Image (cartoon, rainbow, N blue to C red; front, side, top):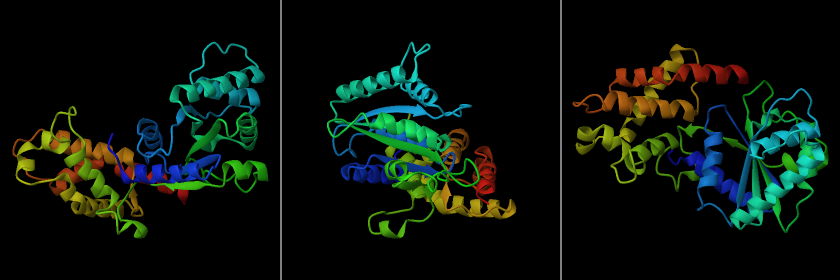
Length: 314
């Protein structure tokens, strides 16, 4: 995994919301943009945290009935509780509360973040049951929910429930929506003074400078796979404009709107292809040709992912 600007923006926002004492945070974004990976990074890194924090995680499902028992069972299974058997909703609630307290003790924290992935599948009934769990915690031990929502899961987006939610649910779980992007092609206006390049260029730079391969004691990933070219001054970041030009041509040819960001799912495969299968297999490699870039975009299924994303948002 590399560190990306979208991940850093997310960490900054959540850190601020926690300091404000909010009960939850909603992260919305396109499918395959890197939302789950970024939530994982939050769990793995410490520098962004204002204080000690415990973490638990579940993935929301789509049960036939959105009962208290069903959502509590999903939560219990998600955080790894065993021997649930025929436990009723009250038993499950009690065990989940205990698990949250144990995670707080493990992390020596007064706050536990409960990540709910695929939260676009939740119903208002689910939020009512989640609120019942939430009510068991106070300032002595805060429970904070991080909802990870795929905004292009269906027509209407991830927050079609916001307008229907009663005040006590809206105020807890819909006040702080945050739109998570893939790697932006342009530097946001409010970051131009501090950000030296766009998200895509910075991510490519991570392979040039930040990510060592195959281990921490190795050269950068770019140097490992393109040793001669790297020694001659070539960097993957230098290809940013050439890649963007090929994406423009591809979108025009496929009648797709030019996206403002690059989904992490296709970006990572593209980089893998050009470093491993292009540079790594050619001892005379000196830089990416147009054909190399076109083949990389084909290998990562760039057009297919964009077509699916844009179709849902039409």
